[in-house]
Length: 356
Image 1: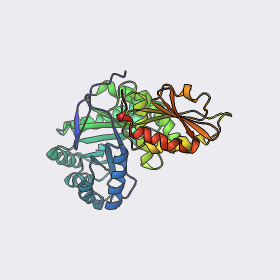
Image 2: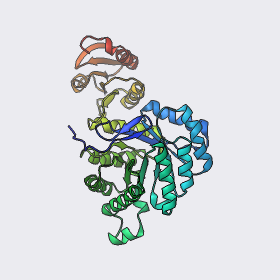
Image 3: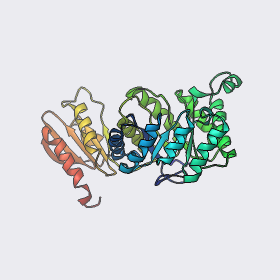
Image 4: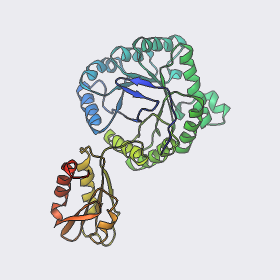
C-alpha cells in the first residue's frame, strides 16, 4: 500500500486536497472560454466522466467575465489559467474562479503580484504556482548549465516565497516538464522541501498513445512514492481521454476505488471473434456503471474461464457461441451475438446477488 506524504490541506470550491484527502483528477477545457455554452457543455461532460476540478484559460477580459455565467451551470471547481496580465487574474477571482493558476515570474512587478494576492486573500481563493521547464529563468539555466530538475524546483520555491512574503500561503505548487525522468526527479526534490500540496502531470506529453505512455510512467513513478495531491494526464486529444487515463492510473496504483475495470486478452491464433471490437464495446458500456468490479473479456472458450477466474465477471467468445463467467464459474452458454447484452444485464443486477 502506498504511504502518501501528508501535505497542507487546501480548499478549492467544495473540494479539499492535501492531507489524507483523495487524489483528485483535473483536466482543462479546450473550448474558447468566451463561448459560455460550449464551455459549460464540455465541463459537465468531463464532470460526468469523473473530472474533479477543471481549468479554463483566461486570455481576455471577456473570458474572465464569462466565468460568472459558467459557474452557475457547473458543479465542479473552476480554475482560471492566467498568463502575463495580472488584471485578468483579479477579474477571474472577482467573477467566481475557485482557484487561479499563475507563474508570478511572468505576471510582473511586486505591485501587480500584490494585487493578485490581495484579491485572492479577500475571497480565500487558492493560488496555484505553476512553473514549467520551458519557462525556466535564464539565470537558473546558466546556474545549472541547462534545464534541470534542480532549476525547476528552485524557480518554483522562489515564486512561492515571493507570494509568502506578500502575506499569503493558500497555495498549490505545480512543476512540470515534458522530460519524464526530469519531472520525476523534480517532484522528488520539491516534496522534500515543502509541505504545500502538489499538482502532478507530465506537460506536453503528446498524442493519445505517446501521451498515455509518458504520463503513466511519470505519474506512476511519482505517485508510487506518495507524492501528489491532484493529477492531470495532458493529452493532445479529447479531454475525456485524459479523465479515463487518470482514473485508470489511480486505480492501477490502488489510489482510487470504484468503477468497472476491464481486462482482456491480447488475441492469438485461437481467437474466433472480433475480440478487439468486443473489448472496446464492453469498456464503453461499463463507463457509466458505478460498481467496483473487474470484468474480463476473453477471445477463447478453451482458456477463457481459467484466464477470467480472478475477475468478478467475464465473457469468452468462440466460433458462434460464448460463455458468461461469474467468479471463475461458467454460468451460461449463449450465441456470441448475445454476450454483450448478457454481460450488461448481469452488471445491472449485480448488487442483488447473494454475497455481493
